[in-house]
Image 1 (cartoon, one colour):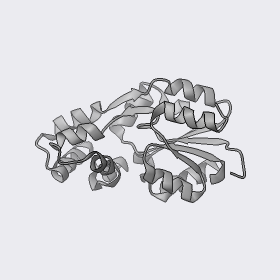
Image 2 (cartoon, helix red, strand yellow):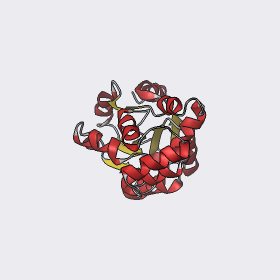
Image 3 (tube, one colour):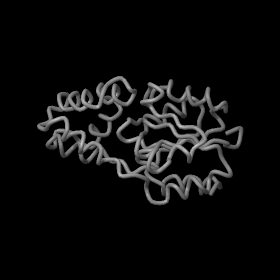
Image 4 (cartoon, helix red, strand yellow):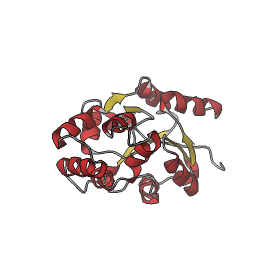
Length: 202
């Protein structure tokens, strides 16, 4: 890096937020989905993309996923389970953000939807922990598409080389790195803290 980082860009689910749609989705599929296929489903599904970019209703999303995966349950039951897969903040996440706030501009870029983001925003006040929030169902594009990162760069006004980016999906890391960010694939708060310690920032 030719410049010291001034911005930390966070994914939410799997990094700061306790979200797990992989094992539950495998179970719903009756074992037809492997761990890797279930992980990639949230990045590649047409109906996930529609819902998490704000282009369909919750009911349309549920019906679409049930049809795509040939699941044997009603839309309301799928949505009830889907909502439960987001369990709030991971232990230590809010403390980590508080510690970093005096040193860095804090930004989040999350593939997210109204069912999961609304409680995080309204009950926890997660949006107030960041200087900027880029939520896919609000900005109309999901990672790992470059457009999602370009929206961040344009609005925040910092060069890519000034960013540290943390995500739990390698596809997103590759896009960020291609644009010039220092990008790290991590799992949870401990993964973030490990990288920051190695870099001398924590």
